[in-house]
Length: 100
Image 1 (spheres, rainbow, N blue to C red):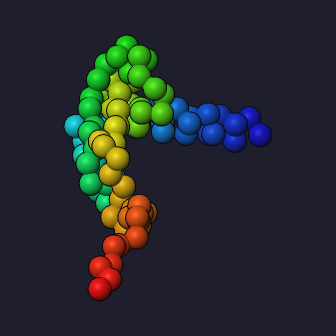
Image 2 (tube, rainbow, N blue to C red):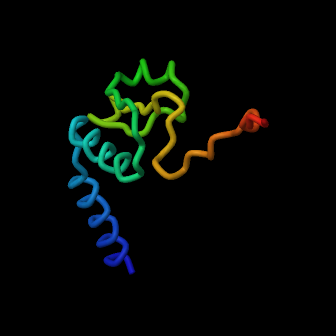
């Protein structure tokens, strides 16, 4: 039983040693691909420091990179909605018809 526990412990150490620090530009590109797949027409992704990220709404932070020292924030620009999800245009007044 001790050998089994030791084997599990050694395997967990080995897997944590293989964890790599993600490059911010690489992660930003991966996130961009996912956003574009959802057909978001206008957005901004920005790489900022961890301290700057703490000043933003937590919902804006979509990624962490370079061992947690930087963050990637997402902001949708304007009121644009993904293609095909826009509500129909409202009609304020009926069209006027000229009567003779």
